[in-house]
Length: 109
Image 1 (spheres, rainbow, N blue to C red):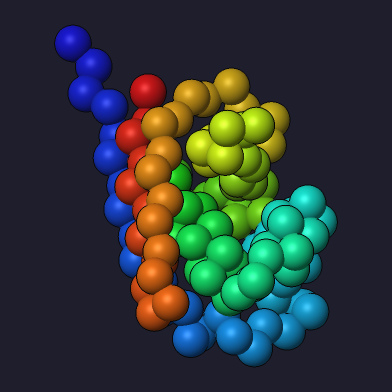
Image 2 (image 1 turned 180 degrees about the horizontal axis):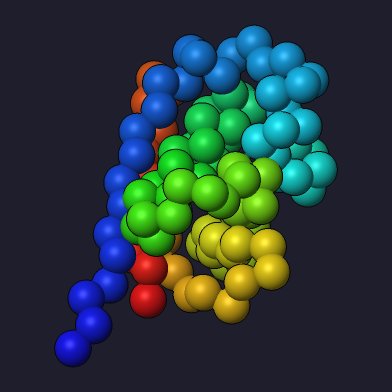
């Protein structure tokens, strides 16, 4: 029986209030940047996506995955889903945030 990988990460929203263009290009896809910037409080969404990417790395135990190769999309229902560029791995993901913190839990199937 295979045990799924589980990852969790938490991020402080205030750390994402002033992001450099260089950081954005290194960590997020263009679609993620556009999604976050469209929101009322972009920092909350940048923090949540960062936590999701870190949780994926922990769930897969692969440290050689570039953060930008992990991307989060929202289904039509608003539920998040996560992918790794060039991989067919499947995940369950839950993301939540407040004005101060963002947290993500990922189960690698």
